[in-house]
Every structure is written in C-alpha cells, then in structure tokens.
Image (tube, rainbow, N blue to C red; front, side, top):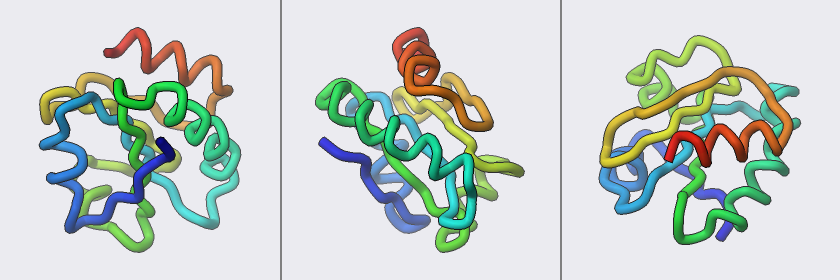
Length: 106
C-alpha cells in the first residue's frame, strides 16, 4: 500500500476513525525536507501495509487539519492510535529513524 492523501474533509474518517495506527505527515510541495522524507514514507507504507497507514496532508491545500493539530513547521509527523495522538516529531529524518520511531510508538 502506498501513502494516502488526506484532506481537511477526510481527516477524521482516514485518521481518527482508522482501525489501525496512522502516521500523518503534514507537508507542502515547496518544502525541501518534506520532499526528502517522501520516498522513505512511501517505502514504509509498503513495509507496514496492513499494520500502519501512512497519510499525507498538504498544508497549503488543507490548512484546517494542520491548524487543528497546532502544526507550526513542516514536515510535522504525528502517530494516531484509536483516534488519539500517541507520538509526534518534527523535521526530516532518515528512513531507519522513522521506522524505529513508528515501531516504538505502536
């Protein structure tokens, strides 16, 4: 499975009401560090298929979800489990660090 594009309108359904944990990446097209972690998140989405959903929210097109989460800088990553944030981090990181963070959190 690849990453899932989430909008303000689909945020609750895709993230808060998900049956499995969800990693949400708040990003923007113009953000260099966001583009840097994009391929790693795509790979992790495939590796965690069925265990964890990886969702991407473009903050330029969907400002409400980002504002509701208090996102001030991007990339901003949040892990939701049972509709609640259980962990978050900001900034780019290598794939191995992202994978460890996800595994430790879920």
